[in-house]
Image (cartoon, rainbow, N blue to C red; front, side, top):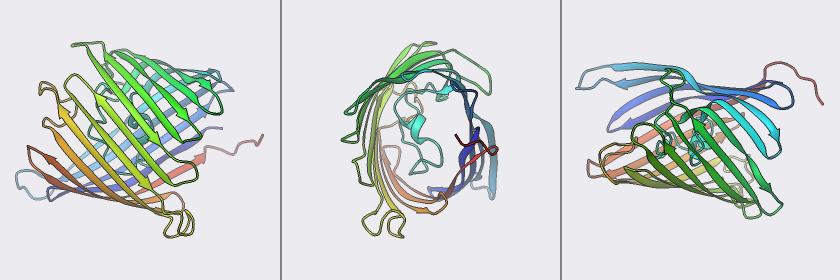
Length: 318
């Protein structure tokens, strides 16, 4: 039975005294085509209202409508899934796991989020992924891909290859992984990444972190969040409160290309306070302080996000 999922929200960001408003909708469809085939796709529809520059009154307006990815999955065995189409590049964890608006604890992605993702974050080609080994005490997951070069406006991508290897220890709630990507067009470059996630069992604490290194820059981020479940459980008024903290740094190796990172060494701390309302509604608030030689600044962000999930039609229970 095909499922329509995704999320939408209304976000605001005040940076240097200027406030930007961002309504966003990210619908996702997952449609099984028999026992071994799955079609999935996610779109992004955004509107942005930001103050006019040069002291001009009023706001400027931009909009974007496009597909984030569109792929077909062939489940060949319990250990192998073959992916074809436009897919999210499996480098690190943020791009695949945390970037959707209804999942991310903070509005902004990490400063290094674009590093190793070949500018668009998507590849056009094929991918092999799955669980290489699955035991009660540990499992090893893998993802390997090749992307062709494409100048299509909707499915833009660069020629590249790479993948990710992860070890998960379920008894400890610990995952560690390594990523590698290589750009195969223009000036060939290598990108390296590592991630550590820790989610102890029977707690509402989560620690997530990544490191990434490219030819021109490198950096890391560490994020922790905790639901106050000891005060009446997750569904109590206190249990719905979720403090979030993230620290991150970027370091320049040269200033020839930015790779999407700041052109000066930058430090940033984010303090968030989210509230998880019933029916998959979340209120996101955060304050960030960014330090760099180009100038320090404060960033205030608020937003309301809704997660939805429903079948396209009534299915038969099995």
